[in-house]
Structures are given as structure tokens and as C-alpha cells.
Length: 212
Image (cartoon, rainbow, N blue to C red; front, top):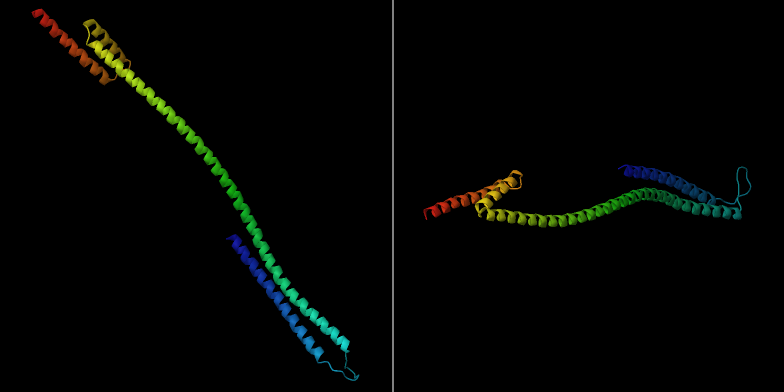
């Protein structure tokens, strides 16, 4: 908005300068015409008081001078208009150069930001790739320990179904694991169900053997 107002003010100044130059040029044109008429109307006359004559050579010299003034005046008009136009163009170019400079600086700053963001994205992608790799390794490790844990539980359950002393030893071992937070409530409950069932089944076996 500020640049626009400055250009508008400059154009107004240029307009006034052209009007002044045009006025002066018109006045010179009029004076030249009057002089031509005066010279062309000169007559040869006898010498009389307050009356003057002019030679043909002098007349031609004056007319030539007037023609030169006409040409000079025309050149002045073109030069004046060209000067004003060049001033306007130079002012506009100067403003445009400043705008281009600012846009170039902004563009360079933008390229720098884009380059930085691109590098950041590249680094983030590498980090994501590494995290995916670590996550896969962690999943494999978790699966391994899950399998190992299930095998341990099945092993204990199998021992729970064994002889009386072995059953009691592994039941105590299971309770110890539970108290240390290794077995969950569900796991210890499943093992206890097997323990109770096997213990109850042993009683029936002992009773049946006694009857026999």
C-alpha cells in the first residue's frame, strides 16, 4: 500500500512537470509564430524617423534562426517527455529491485527451511525404520518368552500329576513363583485346580486299594 501511494504521488509530480513544460513550449511556439509574421510583413521603405528596414540577408538569417528554435523546441518536448518517462521507469525499477531482493531472500530462506525439513523427515524415517526393526525384535523376544513361560507352566502341571512328594514339591514351587509375581492369579488357579484334582484322585486310589 505504501509503495502504491509513493508511485501515485510521483506520477502526480510528473504530470505537473509535463504540464509546465507543455505550457512553456506552447508559449515559445506562439512567440515564434508572432516573430515569423512580423518578419514576413517587413517592407522596404525609405529612411524615415522611427522607421527601420532590414536587408534580405538579415531576414533570411532571422528565419533560419527561427527554424532552429522550432527544431530545438521540438527536441526539447521529446527530451522532456522522455526524461519524465525514464524517471518513472527508474523509480519503478528501483522499487521492483527492492521487491525482487526481498522475494529472493525469502525464497532462499524458504529453500533453507525446506532443506532442513527434508533432512528432519529423512532422519525421522530412519528412526521409524530402526524402531520398527527394534519392535519386530521385541515381538520375537516376547513370543519366545511367552512360549518359554507356557512350557514352564505345562511342565509344572505335568509334575503336579506325578507322585505325592513330587506333586507337593512343585506345588510349593508354584506358590513361590506366584508370591514373587512370576505367576498370575489365573496361572496359579489353573495349577491349583490340577493339584486339587490329582490329590483328590490319589485319595480315591488309596481307598480303592484298601478295599481290595
